[in-house]
Length: 159
Image (cartoon, rainbow, N blue to C red; front, side, top):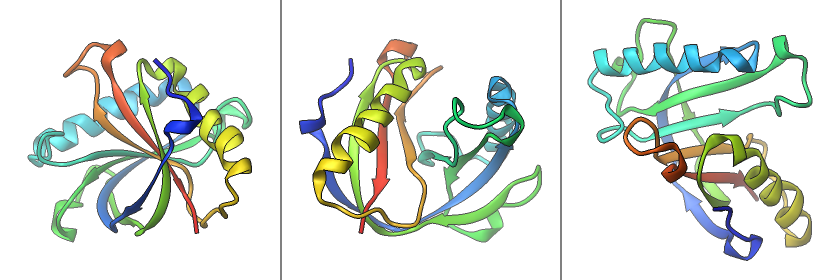
């Protein structure tokens, strides 16, 4: 169930420290990166119940060659010591205002929600973009819920 542009909320997002597993390459291989990142999270006690899950979207997979596609898989952490090993880096999602659209449903329709926010709502909003990519917070997701019941908040950083 996609939500309409009138359901866009403006929020202040607090700076959030995250452990990052970067996937760069063919979008069809993201599932393998997710599997590896889940294993790392389990080893470090960072379950989704304890640690919020984010994805930072650098590219639209339909507009870049597969080898150039990049997405960061992220888990909220409290300190630098939680970001070690397994190709994991530590960084922050910066604080600031964001337009947020809630997507409910499978990932295969997520692109439509992102376009609705970025290409639909944003141009008519009168807002200005901040210098940070669109990112997602995965609120409820597979395997904890069936794919059709996934809940994802899409964040568009604005000035």
